[in-house]
Amino acid sequence: MFNGLSFDDLNALVKNKRAEPYEEYFSVMEISRGQKEDRISLSEDLEEVFLFILILLFTMQQYNAVNWELARKRLDGRYREAVEKHVPVDDYLSTYITAFSYDTIDSTMRHESDPYYYSKDRGMYLAENEANLTYGHTEFEQAIAAGKTRKKWIDVRDRRERETHLKVGGTVKKITEPFMVGDSLMMHPHDAITFGAEPKEYINCRCATYYF
Image (cartoon, rainbow, N blue to C red):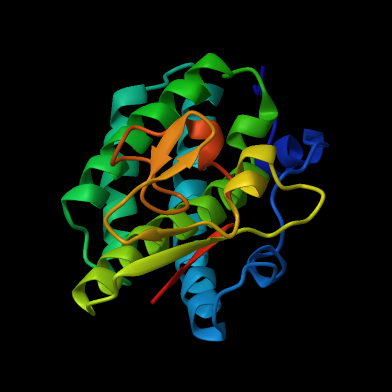
């Protein structure tokens, strides 16, 4: 499908944009300025990683020689390197990054004729979500290490918020107890791993956690 197209040509085909400028995306979250800056910085590094992988896949597709496993391994390794510049990659993040690499390559394979799946917009959309997930986990671990004992789910309460997050917003729990979000148990917003939350409950989530 993409024979003869440049990467710029492909991006021009994408009309249904999902990503937002990082400053705008994180501005609605009830987190400190420092937390927002951390997320923006990681998003920028992750965007570079994801665009490299998407351009690699696009180029392979041009020559009808797509090596999906090579791309997955590159994604896994470069994602880890980007995160390690900001926070330690512990067992939780390591497990998640590997699962993410498989899921991302699989979804691209299943939509290989859709320009969006190779686009800059997708790279940005992934980056802002992954930055939130990384720091959501890291801040949870830091709160435990600091001796915090309770936590509060802080939702955004705008027209885009999903109903399940609206319902859990404002809920206070012991720091070791999970929140019930729809049909998923989650230790904090963006918690994809601990109890195997459904992707619909953590993808593009802009909720935050207050620890005390």
